[in-house]
Amino acid sequence: MNDLKDLIYFDNAATTKVSESVLDAMLPYLGQIYFNPSSIYSASKHAKGAIEKARAQVAKAIGAESDEIYFTSCATESNNWAFTIAQGQNKQPAKPTHFITTQIEHPAVLNTAKQKEKEGSQVTYLSVNEEGLISPDDLKKSIQENTALVSVIYANNETGVIQPIDELANICKERGILFHTDAVQVIGTLPVDVKRQNISILSLSGHKFHAPKGVGILYVKKGIPITNFLFGGGQERGRRAGTENVANIVAIGQAVEEAIECMEAKNEHIKKLRKLLFDRITQIPKVKFNGSMDHNLPNIMNFSFEGIEGEGILLHLSMQGICCSSGSACTSGSLDPSHVLIAMGLDHALAQGSLRISLSKYNTEQEVIRFLEILKPTIEKLRAMSPIWKP
Ligand SMILES: *Cc1c(COP(=O)(O)O)cnc(C)c1O
Image (cartoon, rainbow, N blue to C red):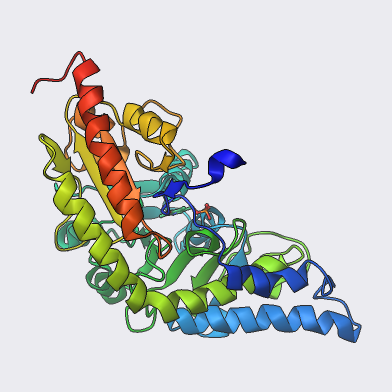
């Protein structure tokens, strides 16, 4: 465990540390208050009450009502469920269900859409421009009479690029089509108000905002008929059976409340770190910023370095105690370049030379300075060894 001391953790889009206060809030539900929330005796009411408190905390954080919030095991499950719900809306079963999504979704949406295609549905994958933004006009043109769902990632996990969610959701509202957004990366960074923004279904994941892994949220606007996801007992109003993960649910309630409370201070802090990183990294020759200057989360930054592979950068940084990523943790391990960067028009070589830096409120200016001191010589060294580098 000694190698975990003094790590610089710049991979917060992959997962985040559980905060002390979240840990404090959840631990009693692994210890003294271990009861099954569905039991009859009064002790179990403490567990039941804690779940309902967390549901209210989540609802408040996104402008929803408690009975529109469902607890799941992760955002992957939430995204899968969103598609299942939409499929249940198909009013003309003779026709296949049509889904619209984008080329830059997280695998949790992309592979759900691909599975629906295998099962006979139709899917349109909207393209993005070089800044990573989809066009609302493209969405309008893609809508068909059998379109059941439009699913668009709120802000991309590899680049931090923020989509024009309000405009997209309004188009769907006018056409009477469900609008789902994978909002995993935005909670605690952008304000979310599902009512004002006309969002029908929304997915969240606890471990991206300082709750533990293994708990997610699905918001479903009241009035939308819900296809059950897990069949069994009466938990989650019978729609997602299985004994509740009480401690994790308590944690996500606490974490979401803190994320909203800290949002402004956190963003201010992170914007300073971002500026420092951006200014210094863009001074390195032949580096490309992969993102949007005007529509980007402050805490996620993605760069490509000509002449070298992202994996090489990551390994060298790792040897010096720095945790970064080349893109989605869920696609790493495969040698394919990022589908997100390819969709933004990068060639394979550049898409393979990418580095994602993702910050949290725990990162400091000292860490940024140390990182920058290490990054520049690392890039120079790798380029000097690279057969394809042309200065
Ligand atoms: C991490 C992430 C997910 C998956 O969340 P899990 O809770 O790990 O399933 C989905 N979408 C985005 C945008 C993510 O960043």
